[in-house]
Image 1 (cartoon, rainbow, N blue to C red):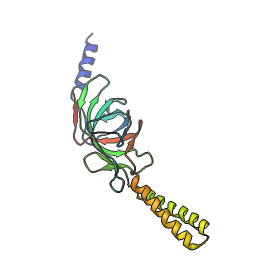
Image 2: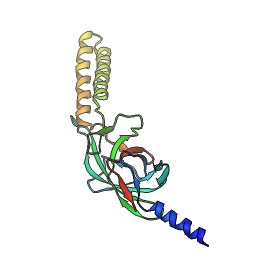
Image 3: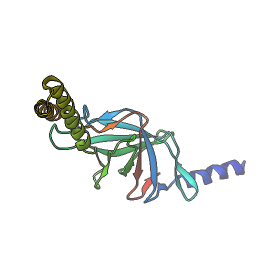
Image 4: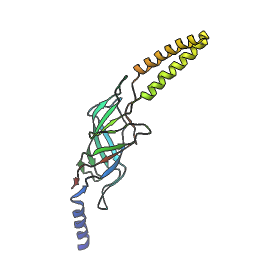
Length: 202
């Protein structure tokens, strides 16, 4: 009967004082979708760990552990200038045992889903890329359509010029009235976080 008791004692000693080491990374997947279209400061964001966190060959945080964060900043993209911004702070980790651990790792990189949204600075802020390229394409496309219609109507280069000018105006108005791309983080998207300091798991 001494061996089971000794085993339990050693297991308890190993569990006590376990920690997430400084510099450790963890991949988190979004449980709920988040977008700067609707997100507000104070909204909660929920994740699950997609990879375990290991320290000295021992898993201290298993996969599918529950993580909660909060929106610290949300800014929609502008119609003329300004890109969308979303700040997220990770706050708690809930282990399968039910134990809740406070933590504040930094966002390191984001699964952009083929886009160009990325982590900027040390404030765990996600920024969307500009839409200048698509704006230029919209204006150019409208100008080309207008020129073609003007040329067909007037059957002259003068008509094409007038049509092109009108088309450019329509394209520019479309750009001015349309917002740029928003930060969109869908369910299942992943974010890599890094621990700036060790976190003790008693």
